[in-house]
Length: 115
Length: 111
Image 1 (cartoon, each protein chain N blue to C red):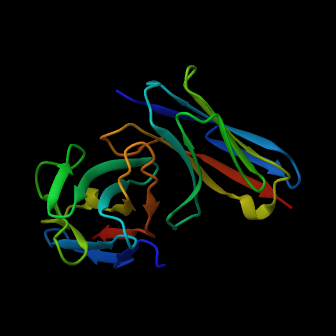
Image 2: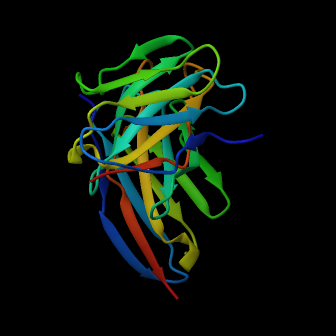
């Protein structure tokens, strides 16, 4: 049973380019969360999705960032016109979404470097 | 607004010592609390999850306790080993929201 998969593991972009980060949840999981870890800071929630629905995007910047979790295929976190401040590790987690348990399992992360 | 604090921020111990990592949270209305381990440049590994109705969970040399009323959790590591060196993260979950993390305790165990 494969765990949460993320790709690419490392991504380098120049300022102004687009970054696309992919996350495939664990088998049987329909809930996906994206978190960002900036250097020297803790993990911060960005967005929570179920299949074809954004449930909570309160942690995501209003501009340049978007996320989707289509009926088929992985969840995508998209960052348009990247800036140096977007350099961070982006982690995806998945869960079964059971209300009182909701144990989340994390992927290895995508480390984005903006030059 | 829920805030999670972990003390100490860093800890260095010799191999074989028993140690305690602390986590406190401001809003006691949580569903569960999870402890994670993160190795440098790596992802997060879930160590223990304590549901709100439970007071502790154990896995091998690890024991985590939860006191909702005081807003505290501790992670006890017995007979520490150099392989335990990592950053330990505490996170709380409240229904309808994602995990809220502390900044972690970075543990170094010397041989």
